[in-house]
Amino acid sequence: MAIVNNPLLGEIRGKFGPGVFAQVNGKTVLRSRPVWTNKKVSPSMQAQRDAFEDAYPKVKAILNDPVKRAEYDAKCPPGYSLYHRVMKAVLTS
Image (cartoon, rainbow, N blue to C red; front, side):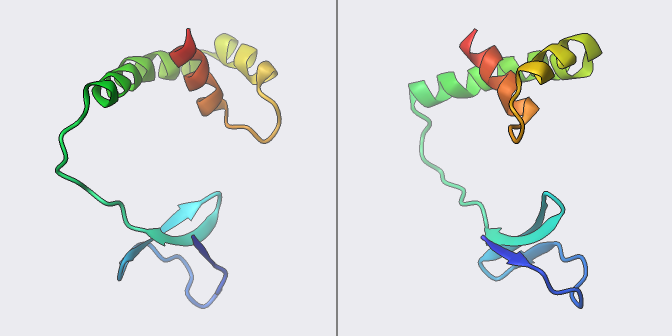
């Protein structure tokens, strides 16, 4: 992933050749474009996708509730994403 630090370019977004410009943590980066495939999904992969689909509303509800959010925020070490910490807790429960 290449980081663009050129102030002359300003804000760049969209695709460029085999890459795509994106904003990550306030920086403009150039990363490879997603690769789509027509392969069949295995049963274990479908089970994982279903687990994420079921977990997302629960994670969103926790993050929107100030009390629950504060509980998870207290457990989350500095530098870690609160969203990922809550998603891990919901998926493993």
